[in-house]
Length: 301
Image (cartoon, rainbow, N blue to C red; front, top):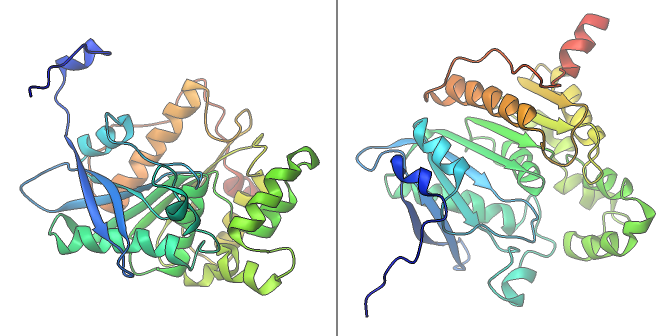
């Protein structure tokens, strides 16, 4: 049988050259097979790696055109996207293998094992790896920097929770059923204070060795600004390198184009500084509402 293309949904993209996305399989340390996607910047030599962690966590990454992976490839970084246990799309058993496994459990181990796979395959430079993600992916970034500090050169956390108990306490009453479901899947942080401390990066910032960039929306109804504030100010107090960008008119992610471009520009500069890739000149975006709480606190002091 022959496969024939039916149509091109974005014909303007045919004018550009893109990196291919590879479908990969990785064996976790306990033998579980994981599906992931690798986009290389260079197929001939090792490059820095960005481990791009999807949010949810009850969601998944897909094979196909990914603008973020293409952006990273253009700047000289390989991008690894893994459907760690707890992701959707692989059956109920795979989904529930993530129950109770946040932070220091097998969900995070899957990400660490995927990075090791890329190192063992000779794809990436083991000294230049970034963990990057939003929402749960932001949490995974914080967990990676605190629980496996020797793996990552830097991290980018977008609207990620730093303390699971305060995250769940901020859920409004009308989201009650969602909160109960999250407790079942994460673990009972209400009843077990030590468990919450065990899986919440906020209580382990002394372990952090790598610089962190945080992006947050002040109107986020899911992951409140306090989640970013508390870890950013705690890191600053301890002299751990951290940059914190707050957008007063954004929520759970960045919707306004000016703000999205602004944060991407700042992330690109951050990645170039710590991983050594390419970056365009950047001096902020007119129309962006970015503010910098850590800098403001220094002025006030």
